[in-house]
Amino acid sequence: MGVIVQKFGGTSVADIERIRNVAHRVAKAYDAGNDVVVILSAMAGVTDKLISMASRISERPEKRELDVLLATGEQTTAALLAMTLISMKYPARSLMGFQAEVRTDCAFGNARILDINAERIEALIGRRNIVVIAGFQGHDREGNITTLGRGGSDTSAVAIAAALKADVCEIYTDVDGVYTTDPNICGKARKISKIAYDEMLEMASLGAKVLQIRSVEFAKKYNVPIHVRSSFSEEEGTMVWSEECDMERLMVSGITCSKNDARILVKGVPDQPGIAARVLGPIAEAGIVVDMIIQSAPKNGTNDIAFTVPRTEYDAAMETARRVAEEVGAEGVHGDQSIAKISVVGIGMKSHSGVAAKMFSTLAAENINIRMISTSEIHISCVIMEKYAELAVRALHTAFGLDREA
Ligand code: ADP
Ligand code: ASP
Ligand code: MG
Image 1 (cartoon, protein in one colour):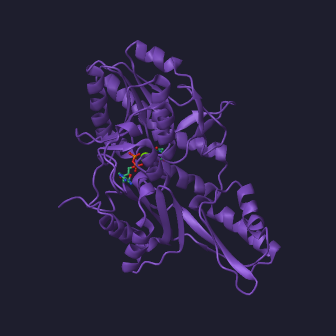
Image 2 (cartoon, rainbow, N blue to C red):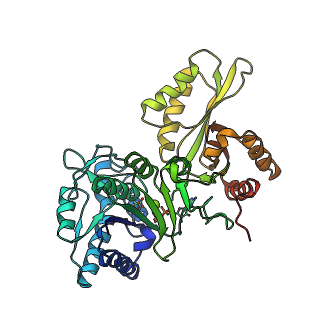
């Protein structure tokens, strides 16, 4: 018995039948004597549909109003689950983000949680209510509705679990745990029974969308154990927790793939000191986060600078890059949105050499051209053409000995 936070993702609440299934799971935890707080996503596909509706009105819809719109997806599922539980004679109560006092900064569309006043939730569970909270949303200091970025209900769940000092935060999704790579790309992916926060952080930041990265940051900071599991089976999933508990240590723990970036190439930039700052400074000033950067060797007094930006910022980044290119007298700007970033991740890599060489030779053997490279102590990433992404993931998964035994 204790406090359990259960988060259900979009596929788990995709229709009324599935919401009933969720209600039964929640009821089971409640009947076992636990205090249960449930965080919900919108029904699968609803957030996308709302975004596309807004884009029919304007290319760049007003951000405040877009958040008001997007928050309705989670409002719907929270009400439907609370109703279902009540119809089953459970004392349930839904709360929107602002009612649960999830306070964020005012970065509409990508807000950060600043703090949560858990008193109202605590008072409700103290009276044995099941509290159902709309994920993905909060409010800023002026009372505006904000949303937390795609996949943000994971972060709502972990942050609320931290505020309640919950015993565990269960993340129910459409796969039964965290795998060595996306099991929907590679049939030989292996389920990981436990993974340390740091490794999960790296996997999440490099494309494993099973957990939103900020949720793992919260979990690490407040030491919240996360149990990632399937809402369609009873099987144990993956525990994400502090490193001391993680005994097994493979050199490489996983392969990730991200299609969230775009590449911008500024060609023929005059080779002068300070030029990289002149090209990239305005991009940063526009609030666009640059990830990888490559500068070619100088040729005839000029060189090329290539960098990646989030695909959602592509148009704004191209606009800025074109303006800067003209100012510095560069030859031109090329953009490419059909790229993928493939990464090999593992804390165990720190003490092993040869991981990079193996990654490059594996991609070469598949005739896949590497366009950019970046490394850290615990990951190596290569940018390749998007159409080779799945092939690259499978080849690397095999090459690093991660395949499940047949
Ligand atoms: P939810 O709607 O429940 O939040 P998401 O679609 O956000 O679910 O996340 C689950 C998906 O994450 C899986 O369907 C899977 O395709 C993807 N995924 C990517 N990498 C991994 C990984 N390493 N392990 C498990 N799932 C992964
Ligand atoms: N509904 C939001 C999204 O689709 C948040 C979430 O599901 O976590 O991104
Ligand atoms: Mg998700």
